[in-house]
Length: 143
Image (tube, rainbow, N blue to C red):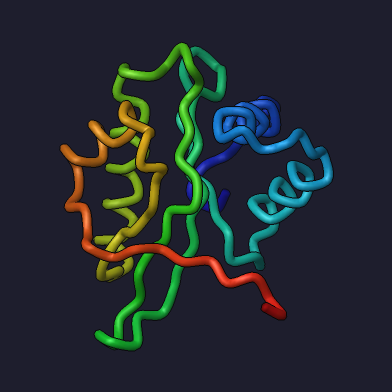
């Protein structure tokens, strides 16, 4: 959260994010992520959107090395807005904030993934960024 301070609703908003993606409720995970974004020495950062004193959006991000270009990118892990704030420009504002941060720090790209069926978010993303041809894989350690 070096780029933004999270009000007390941060954990609740992140719980909403987890529920949206049908992830099991897990207070240990929520607390761990909270500890990451509040620890200035941790690689995960956060920017937030606040309206009328309430947290209405968050974005978790981190830097990553890009060996093919010898540059640094910014990876957006999570972007979430409260259900009542969707379609109001909160997500776009968070993406603009990340873009401005990238420009200020000489970051070469802001990159993220989303679920193929997340049509509302994809409308925003398609109007903001370019979809790539790359397919994402996950390898379970030890497999």
